[in-house]
Length: 210
Image (tube, rainbow, N blue to C red; front, side, top):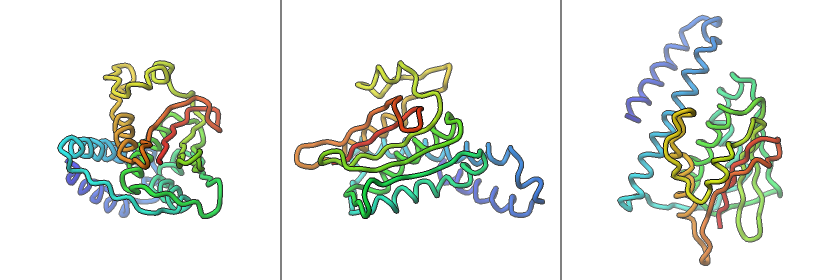
């Protein structure tokens, strides 16, 4: 399914390149590109969870500069952000801040959160990284209405089931929790948390990596 979606989007991109400028900027294009990216993210998560369950998802941590990492996450969503007039920004607490984690796996978690934030934010998304004690803390904030109270109250169990009114399955949060837990050092395990006390006044997703 993921490969088929990739081929579909490649063909779509080639088709768009031959359209006149008026059609190229159509609102429908933004919907197609956003939902395709969202679907691709869900397929990546499902594949990752399957590999976790059969112990075939290797952890490949390396030293990464947070400035480059956060910039790359925003760059992947640049077209969608511009199409929806959403201001994307990032901030690293100190110059040259480094982290030791699996960039692909954590990038998948951050990318999924950005996708969700695009859906619910009003005008801005902000990424940040800093040290919280001995752990690296990465946050993704938006200026939307924030997380529903039921999600905040149920943070001890990220498998929340299916919400028919919102279409939420809890898959993204469960995936984020599993990836965070893969990162361990000196008996400390990574974790995630949700808050409505973000710097932009909306929801904020937090992931700690030891």
